[in-house]
Length: 346
Image: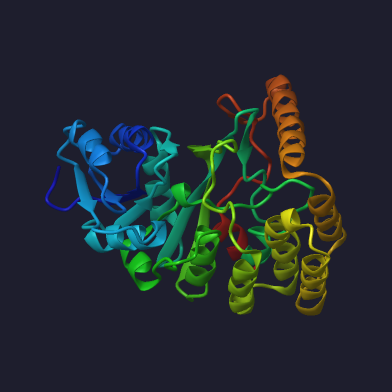
């Protein structure tokens, strides 16, 4: 490893030694080897420290925090420790495909803005199905806050960004740290705040480069979170969102947290919030109603069945000559970097 690596990889973890070991191995197997891997253990955790020591790779560095303060703080600590000009983020329960960093670094070189955020599509793997998201990339005239939040159908994933896909200049991640204490939508919060800077734009790699494991049978960080707390975050974030995006987040993400309460007051509050400060569309109303009327597990099952069938149909038709994502069907016709699409109309 050189004295100054080209990419620092930051992985926060706690009490999941098997998962973080898998994540680290996927980084060490990258075709780009001029890297350092910084695993930040969020609080006392001897088992994880021992598991990482067993990997025995000079590119791996472990930072153990004396007490747990959450993943956003751990990421910020890792970024402060980073020595490379670029930092890539990885959650401990995900993994990268071998070309991930190589593809993103090439896109970063070609970016026409001083400070590009380079993300990618990913393979969303659940206990029932596997499919690629985001299913599309932004239209030329589409505000990025709407791309990241507004649905064109009843299932999420039209536009999307996830922490494990992000590569960004280390300087940007220090200038715009993750919000400590925010337990959900951490990557969306960070991306919106970063994009508010004039020298920043978003580029998305067309191919899936990350495997995102969604074990929905395992307890989730967001389980039991107060929807009121998340609504407070949304209200603070409103200046970074278009009215269309604000309505979409209120009627989908915040509503999905409130719906298990079956509270008529929560129903009225969120519907009123979206109508008062946002601009809901037909899909937003339909999403809102199905979130409140259909149990979450049934919604997930229906989503996975529909999206998995679409993937299988795409693979069956992949002999048509279209570009194909290996194992995941033909590439959409609109694959392109986000920033490139936006420059077409400037």
